Structure formats: C-alpha cells, structure tokens
Length: 438
Image (cartoon, rainbow, N blue to C red; front, side, top):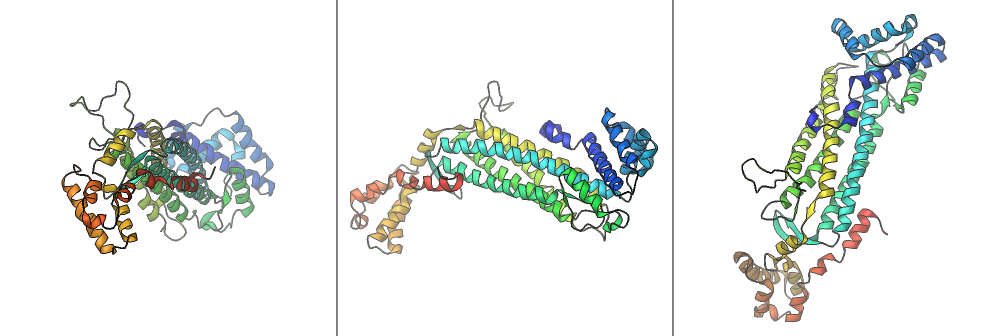
C-alpha cells in the first residue's frame, strides 16, 4: 500500500488493529456457541466478553513480540488474549484451526472493503449522471479508429460510462455476496472436533453466509472472482480516463481536467496543462489488475490446504481495494469538475467540411434508385477531395456540383441531409434506457 494513493477509511480495514478485533470476535462468538452446546463453560465465553468490554486497545506490538518467538500469528494472538483474560481463555479456539480464523476474517475484511467500493461507485454514478444530463444534447464528433465518424452528443459519451459503471456495481454486489462466507469447520473441514452449529452462529453474528463445504480453507474461486471484478472496474475506470486524456489533447481540446489556481503543469514549460489525474488513473488501473492473475493462481491449492495463497492475499487484499477506492474517488472528482468546451466540439465537428454526413447521402442515393456500389462511389469520390483538402472544401457543395448526384437528389434534398439534429433524434430513447424513463 502506497500512502499517496490511500484513503483512511479503506486503509483502516487492513490495519492490524481491525484484523485482531475481527479475530477476537470470531473466537468469542465461537466460544459463545460452544458454551450453548455445553462443550465449554458459560463462564469462559463471559470472561472473554467481559475482558473485551474493558480492553482499551489492541496491543499490536505485544502480539508481534510473541509471534517473533512462536512464528505463528494466530497462536501469538491467542497467547496474548490468554495472558490478559486468564485461565478461562483455555477454552477458546476449541476444535478450530487457524484457517477458520484467517479465512473468516478475510471474508469480513473483503466485505467491508466492498461496501466502501459500492459507496464509491454510487458517488461516481451520481457525478456521471449529472454531467450526462447537463450535456445530453451537446453535439460532438464520434470517432472510430480515432478518425471522425458521425455526430454524437457528449451526454451520450457519459451515458455509456454510466451504463458501464452500473454493470460494475451489479458485479461487485454479486462478488460481495459470494466472498462473504464463514468457515469454522476445523482441520481439513470435516467438523470432527467442532459442531457445525458453531459455524452457523459465527456466520450469523458476522453477517456472513455459511461455506457449504470447505476443506481447511474457503475455496479460492470465490476470491478469484472478487479480484477479477475489481480488475474489471479498474478497466472501466481506465476507459473513461483514456477518453478524457484524448479529449484534452491540444489538437482536440473538447474537454480537460480542472486546472486549479496555482497549479503547475510542467517544471520546464509554464504553458502546460497536462491530464495528470487521468494519466494517474491509467496507472492505478494497471496496479489493480495486477492482482487478478495471482488471485486466479491461488485457486489451485494442494489437497485440503496449503499456504501458497496466504502471502499473495496479504498483498493483494489491501493493495487492490485501497488503490481502487482511491481511483474511484479520483475519477469522481475528475468528472465532477471536468471542463467541457461545446464550442470546440462544434468546431471539430465542422472541421472536415461535412464528411460526417456521408452515410446519409449514401443511403439517400440508394433510396433514390442508385445501387449501393454506385452510391458509395459517388459519395466517396467527392469525400476524398474534401479529405485531401483537409476540410477546406465542402462535401455539400461538391455534391451539389456533381451531376451524377443531382440526377438523383435535388439541392434541397442534399441540404436536408446535412442537418445535425438528425443524429440526435433518438437521444431521449437511449437516455431512457440508461437512466430510466421520466
């Protein structure tokens, strides 16, 4: 985790203090259930909770010092608790294995992280929606292969992003449900030394579902899917960031990141206003996606358990969620303050002498009786003259002077084919699909 790209709420989820608190809750709830079943004394569960109620803080340094000797993190934690609780602590962890604690804790942490990310997505969606309606009918050029294609609106560009991040939200909700599972099944997952009712009790207390069948660990396909969804969200962030970066290029300059008073763009060139935030988002997206392959590789563990996944998850759990949280918040800020230049959009639309209307002319010629091949040839031979003039010539005027074209279409008909509003007639339909009617 790099502090530069971290926010406090998400970072706190991965702190040692939070991890140890979750560990204690797992152990104490399990002891409650064991007491209800008569496996351990009621006094043991009460002793744990009584100590916890008055315990001022987790002594991370003390636990770390014990681990330096035991070389085992869960044993170190249990030893520290026992030192503070006293004799009743011997009933803690009855029939459990370390993975019961570690895997259930990780499920809680990933669910907590998902909740923050879902809130982040809501904020981003709100910002995108507001700007989309603001520019619902702001005409701009649509590009394919980076080349002028046909007119769209800037609102439609943002509607595309809204629909995409809505899908991201739905995927993350599903991934959160899938990852939020509890396993308190003991060594190799057979419940030989612990009743399945203990697992059900702990799961209910922590807001988790019961893992239907675990080995000694929760199956890692769940985790692989979770991190894959984070990777997809990161890619969606990058897609919108790249769009902004392209629109901010000097030759385009249809939109740009907000440039605050006193901000500097270059140490050498005082005129520079660079898309640093969206470039940063591209880099952050790469880092989030870097967690996906290791998460996939974690699925294939040996037999009922090995720990090859453990070190990986100590990296990717915090790093991927903290980085994605920061990236979503940064993108929300970019969209919220994005500077949009409708005049420049119109100027770029007009730059190539009306070439963006070529398809309408092609279709009109076919409707007027010309074959598609002949229609294409008639439009293209005029369009290429405009292209080669770098937009100095007008496609409409060239078509009006082409006798083969005017034999099929009148001047009035040709002029009507260059109406920009024609391309916006279904914007309301698309917006209704994306945002809902009304």
